[in-house]
Length: 214
Image 1 (cartoon, one colour):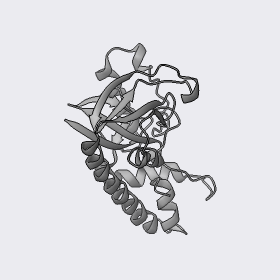
Image 2 (image 1 turned 30 degrees about the horizontal axis):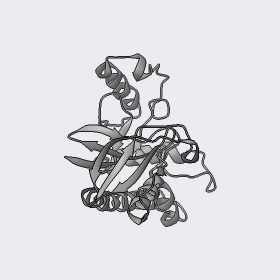
Image 3 (image 1 turned 90 degrees about the vertical axis):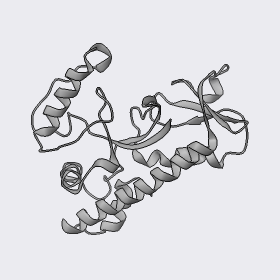
Image 4 (image 1 turned 60 degrees about the vertical axis):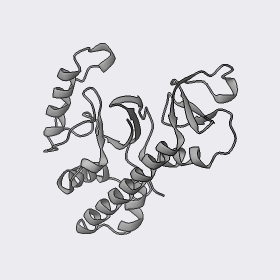
């Protein structure tokens, strides 16, 4: 079953009061041990969260309650001026039968929902790039399907032989996308409510920036 999950990244290096040595998951086959280390790290700030999968730092934004969201906001806004406030790191995860097929990579943030929106606005059938951080991927439309490539660091104009690695039904993808658009709006409203309690000036504008919807 196809599913999209709107996530934010909870890095143990950022959301911890202590220094934690977190091995690269690719060099550390025991993902459960890695996950337990992640839990221990974020719990030093009293965060009570579950990653979407052991070995990942991505958390479904729909599962973040007000208490945890306030802690996350306090960490992100500490010593920040209005010009340096930006969207949360993270992005959209695509799963099929609970297997992660696409996940946000380095330098991705939740504002990249606009990149996914372009999929449905695109009318041509050739390959296009989908920015999800780097490495990124390519996609194209064909006969009511959306085909996706593997991850790549090559620019579209330099990639001569793109191969699809899986495809999804366009209508199903669009239905899932509409769901996560609502999730992101709900997330923005949660942020706004907390910012108002924290007496932030321009809370509406700041909530839109952090939630990646403007």
